[in-house]
Length: 267
Length: 252
Image 1: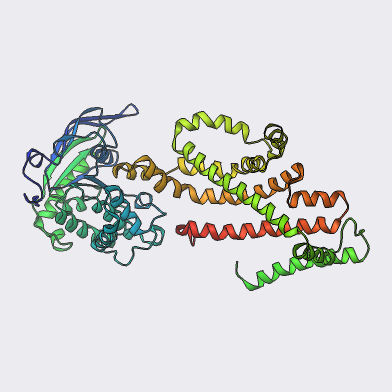
Image 2 (image 1 turned 30 degrees about the horizontal axis):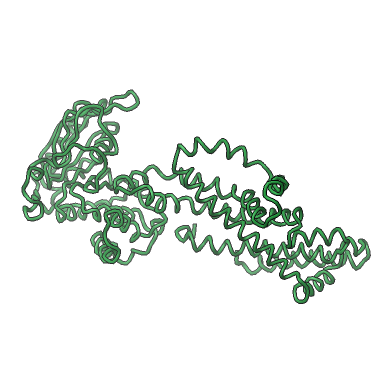
């Protein structure tokens, strides 16, 4: 597990607070109850994954953390403070990278958008953009427009833009769901490294149980109608993880069974 | 379409039309006072441009057209941005705009003359009014129909309304706005010429009108050919501008 170094985050009340806390959340939308009595907390520096059947409110959960959506009851807290709208400390990687990038800006321009929003001085931006593109394996592709990049590369641009925010909380909404298997595995390893390097807290939504176990320190399993927390499993697998060894580890297989049984039950 | 055989075909069609025109006039089917031969039309055109005042008149018309177009484009994009970004402005202004839009600009000329007199500014205003619609409507749509996902991106990044308009709205509206500006320029040329005919302000419109009334048919046709050339140049130039301003659409 990654702990935020005290040098980076001064020890105060906020650093002791969980990065994300859901306190008895209920959410209704169009007369339908989406989430009911949801309570859980994600510690700072933790990589938390959320799995569940479709319609269990996984995406809604992320939108509550971003502040793009408010709960009907209960309170969502980020780093100890009640959420009252979007903050640049929170970045979100959307699944549909094709819609989340500005088609009229190059890869570099899309990453630069976050820096412009952060108020990074113009003369520092080019260097930062290069470093960020390099981090996600896109050096040399900065001057390409999204339409000229493959799906995996577009998603890398979006990840770089989110990292440009230097977020303390990184939300990801099935970010690799639309990618082919090989690209997905490569990006899983990359995102694990990037998150642990940045010291950010990650909340990762997926419908892929293997992916959740592979990436997560903990996996939150939701059930649907209405969306409720059904189970939480601790993933004790060593890091850095490996696509072959970790996935063949007996503990990985055991957790996979536990989660699979759970999802079968809630269906 | 850069296929050489297609290009050769287009040249052939154009030449055939001129050839047909030449044959019709030299055979004596139509009297030269109604349809002069292309050769006499072109020699008249050349003389008018080099020795007469045709060049100055053409410049006057093009100037009027360009200024009217710039007014229409600027007004269309600014007003379109405002209406597209603000639902309230949409509710307040759209009914009035829908009422004004179908009015033919030429019918407003007498009103303009009555209210403001025969000033050059009045004619420019009428040209801009008639040519603003093809820019305004797609611009409104471009600013209002931004992908909801991009709006969320803007919100999570804390991007303010002005930056949102410039970095999200404008580029989203630009391709359609430029297509509109292309139509608008054609509308400008038409309204400019009609306006010059009605208000008798110096320019190709008034010249063509005078030539027709005094049976100077070679002048009439020379003027029309000039207008055709101006229109074709407009279209080519705007094609270049479009590609330069929206590079992300290259190869689509």
